[in-house]
Image (cartoon, rainbow, N blue to C red):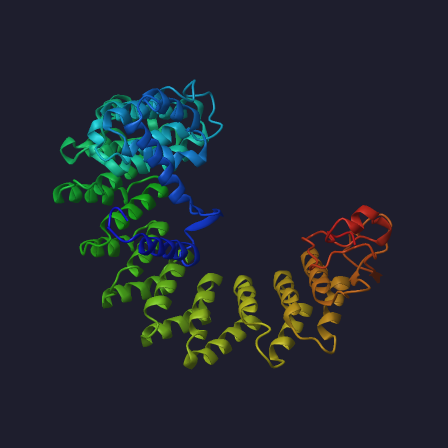
Length: 567
């Protein structure tokens, strides 16, 4: 009424209309009493709580002065429900007041610091770093920013000396994002960079963490040439952790907002050199990933990736192939390279990566479908065969040919892993008896125990009105010489053929002193679930545990839940 000058009646009508909309359509308000409404969403509650605290500090300094704010931060920093409120308060207060409060968080709570072992994340330090990163005028928090970095140095030193695994999680996931948000604009950054150049570059990676190196790269500017320090101190080190820290630092330096074209080019050259580094394949893989993450949009990286696809390191080749497949456009020479890697590479991981890219991006090309058919018919790796089969089955005009080739490999291929993969992919199939007959044959007479076990497991999926699959499972339990096949048959029989009211039937031995060592199962015994057993889920018997004779079952075993090989 006062602001817009509306009549009293019209103002009330508009107010109630807005309240109804916020309650019934937006679900922002909820009724708490007669003519009393409140916000439901936590974001509103946190925001208005922070606004109230700041408003009291501004207009009632005698009741809500700096001492009250210090007490508020000191008492509530560890409470997760208060952290967002405290961040909002720190961001809304004048810079000199926020500087005092953030310094308090970093240096005066959670003492002693650092502890012998971190029982949990130092949320006071995380909260202080977040407050600095979100400050409207970070330059006004110079003291707080420096205090936070000094405590971070102590945390890194603690991780080096105590080998505390929690330090890595805290620094990488909680602190680094805040430091990265400001980068070279972080107030008081010089204290961290001075420590890193003097000591951190030689020791911080000993704990296995790259946090200190990445933070130094983020905080430095291109003119300070931290990359040269990294190459000089870490590039010649023999330890794998040091070289990985070098790659991580170069990646952060390449992603700096103030990086010039010359600086980025220099980082790219240094990372490319690490892709060919001798020793650890982990270093080479990290360098390739850093190149793709920071220079993936550049056209000149295409030539680099093509060269890396021919690297002697199979892991590097696989990453290069995957990265080539992620580009917006695949040129003819890239497609030829992928076809070559898919068919000729000796490493199965590289072939799998190339087949996955071809299937996802180039399936419409005739030479690609021909290559996939050839791989389906001849490749010895189950993953390559599986990818080729799935891709070809998704194309209507290729599915029948692909299915026929896959079925022929199931029965006559020397590679056991390929046969097991194809059984899982194709059998029992949809409709018809061909798949069922093949499964019955494989389960009963295949020379490979692992193929028999897979076939037994797939028999559960067959519609079995005449009981042939059931009889084959019982036969495998009694006759199969391999323990894993017998276990798979027990599980399949119990899952598929258990009787809801009277129990389930499994094969068991009657020998009094445990299972026969010979592997022969002399006869079947019907085991009935006791009336008090209320479990109705599928039987889960992990191999090679088998059903025990009824005489060994205690009442607790029978009634404490799903059978675990005892009933």
